[in-house]
Image (tube, rainbow over all chains, first blue to last red; front, side, top):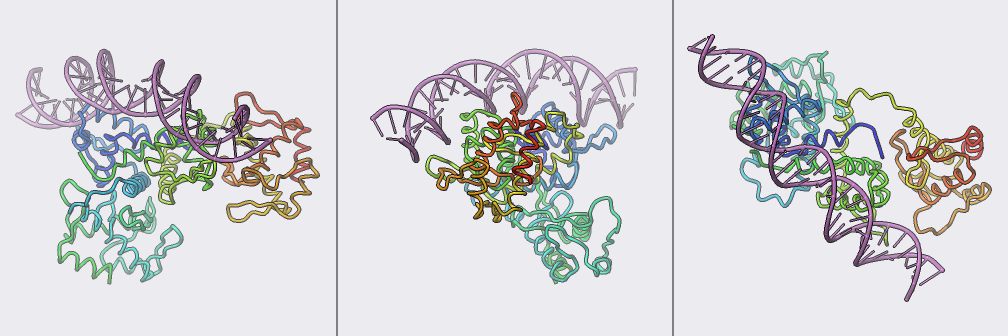
Length: 224
Length: 224
DNA sequence: AGAATGCTTCGATGAGGAACGAACTATGCG
DNA sequence: CGCATAGTTCGTTCCTCATCGAAGCATTCT
């Protein structure tokens, strides 16, 4: 019998369909209320509430009470990364994917991963930033290059030098199976993409759809 | 209700304690037989077999049949990465590691792993044997060195040159996270330790407790 | 205050699945 | 061939846990 971290406990939390749906919904990055999550999961409110307390107890969620609303969100990037990893395996071993619908295609191109961008676009972006030595990829770690601060400042992104969480993190992309950029920098970039209206979030999905002009702007700034 | 890859299915496979233990055991990279995995998981053979077919069906394992042995291994790096991710979260949110009890401490020092010795003692022993070039460590494989036969013969251990199962095998130690010696040689050594009464097995546990004199003898022979 | 909304707790029900013993199949050994 | 080892399949038992309705708190609105 082995011991160590109780991985079964965590996995079984994700292993219930209702809870898995809730977690997937929260991968969008926005905190949701119990009722919204109940709807996402397709269960009644009491059932959802029970699931949510289990997820809380398991440390996978955070809770922000605002008046009579209680907003549940993922506990952190590490949890998000775990969900992505599981999603990747599910995708890979998943039974003969029926033809991916248009929404799946959009998801593959660009989607929200917790608080940063994922998908082919995101992977390409990280590749290019590393190519240009703005970022330095070291094994599994990503660090800022010497020119990083000025580079991002020119775009209008301030890179905090002492954030609570890492500026850069590699996050494995389930659709491309290569890393994309997470961390505060990844979050800031996604924020820019959305506030500049280069892209908009698909309703009720994690997909991020670029406008033709937005794509051009994005490519000019990040893929040049 | 959401669709997409069935993450709950995958997570629930990992979510059973027995299966989680098996997968953790396989994280060492070496494929293991059903009986070994049953032991690791602390369940009976039929139960283990049932779990293994579920893991196979879920696509998390590969199977290599060799004669009447069936070696199960992780399906690939992606699966390993997922386990790592889950382990990371479990570690992070895991309840304030309670101080390991006396029996746990004993387990950490020396315990039975299927039919050979594991724990700090076993890891130290393998290190020393490799140092002295009695055994040769090649990547994940372990082979007999030129002096091995005479060396073990002197101790009273006959090394079969054509055994049914490998003479040497590396087995990852969960407490030390390094390899110890398995295979028929590992089994023979454990046998010697017990028949010489250097140590006795703790009742109803995998722990192996050395007597003061037994420890001296063991160290003289294997750690000199 | 009273009513309405958002959510949790309680209790009962039911289904899934984890467990093992016993019997069966397959491979290897003498 | 018969015996031993490795593993699977079958059938049964048992228990966990997901589910929902009803009732109970809590917060805000009027």
